[in-house]
Amino acid sequence: MSLARRVIPCLDVAAGRVVKGVNFENLRDMGDPVELARLYFDQGADEITFLDVTATVDERATTYDVVRRTAEEVFIPLTVGGGVRSADDVARLLGVGADKVGVNSAAIARPALVDEIADRFGAQVLVLSLDVKRSRAAESGFVVTTHGGRTETSLDALAWAREAIARGAGELLVNSIDADGTKAGFDLELVALMREVSSVPVIASGGAGALEHFAPAIHAGADAVLAASVFHTGALTVGDVKAALAADGIEVRR
Image (cartoon, rainbow, N blue to C red; front, side, top):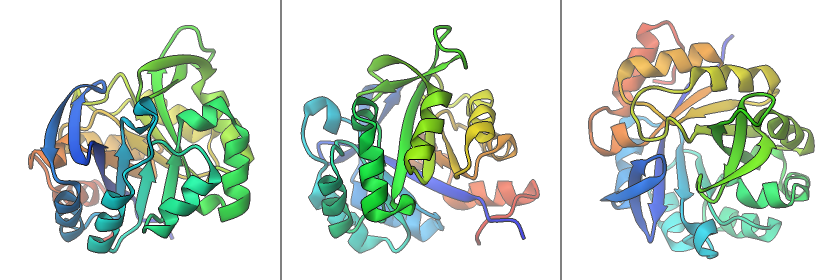
């Protein structure tokens, strides 16, 4: 029996408000995170991902109050990332209602953080968030970035994914910085390459702009598809995406 593919709205949050831009720049206000999370829960979202996109840049903790209020309104898995630097940060997020926690910049700076979180809480809690850019400098053609896509590293994206999985990451959230906010479609090559190296679920992120963009990401190897702008603007609903996937023969949760 095949597993149902998940549809995940993403709430990029800065200063307690949902924001969205193109390639992580020119952010504009899209609304209240708690209200939007409740809307997507009502639409049938499988999970909600909550990313504090400026937490690492500003060197401040994730907004625990917003996480707590969101968790009180939605009864589906809630993944929270942004500014997570220690296992104690994870404990605090789980304590206010998160089900899974995403790590990115801090894990790149100190890979042992992945081991520490996985050992303490289990792989099912740990989502490795990868903000990936195309680069000729990397063997795979892709490097990871930090600080919300602002800082490019020399770390090969596929090599880092393999290492993080070996250390205990239970899921990969693969976001294409090149495609992010463009609404031109997911980076299918990136999704397929991640699928090849990953023994854990892969979430495709970055670039969704139309119904016809979602099924190809699943066919490329994604276990879940994540989007933000198309949901925040009301251009598409979670139900629209699930109906399109089902019409393409892809199993989804009704």
